[in-house]
Amino acid sequence: MSHPLLRAAGSPPLVIAHRGASADAPENTMPAFELGWRSARWLETDVQPTADGVPVLLHDDDLDRTTDLTGPVRLAPYEQVRAADAGSWLDPRFSGTPVPTLQALLGALPGDGRVLLEIKGPHTDRQLAAVLEVVEASDADDRVLLQSFERDELARLHRMRPDRPLGLLTVDWDEDPVATCAAYGAIAYNPDFRLWHGRQAELERLHAHGVSSTPWTVDEPADWRWLSDMGIDGIITNRPAALARWLS
Image 1 (spheres, helix red, strand yellow):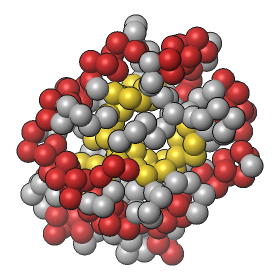
Image 2 (spheres, helix red, strand yellow):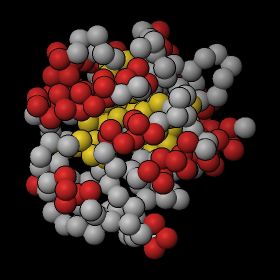
Image 3 (tube, one colour):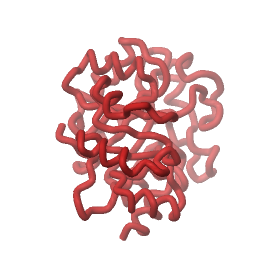
């Protein structure tokens, strides 16, 4: 995979739909992804395993907030998760929307679509291998960038697939982001967007070492402006259509 996120000179930052177009459709569902594709080539989504090891797309540890089920997704078998209603919580018109599998998303990905796939929470080696198996068996293998806040998981992914580029998500600024990324085989350093205030030189240093940054989660035009002006590579947003209009 060549670096798909570095911003070309003279081009705008990439629009990345956070959990799909999650301001307008139920997050991490096919309606949100399909709406996201109308204005963004990149989706961001979260993957974690069911009790029987099926990688599904869900942000929270528990099913309570975004489905009609309760309890941890990792304790629920896939047959139970697949029957959940993951849409009614946002709007009755999305009633019956299922929790998608990773396989279903990659099977529906447009030919020019790409995915920032967050490994959500702790994973065993077997669970990491299950994610890799689905990604590598798809037609989109070279269009999926795995990323995580979980540094142990990133380290093990790097050992399992030393040539596969990865992304590092972070809530705190590392003392040396370039060295940290190198340790994990990361080509992307993706912090909370507020950490970028006053760090123009840090962005230039990352770029000099071939590392991109697509901070999260940015929904206001005032923030789009300063991030775009400083040269950030992409913007993860719940409002991809609004960001695309603003950039145009």
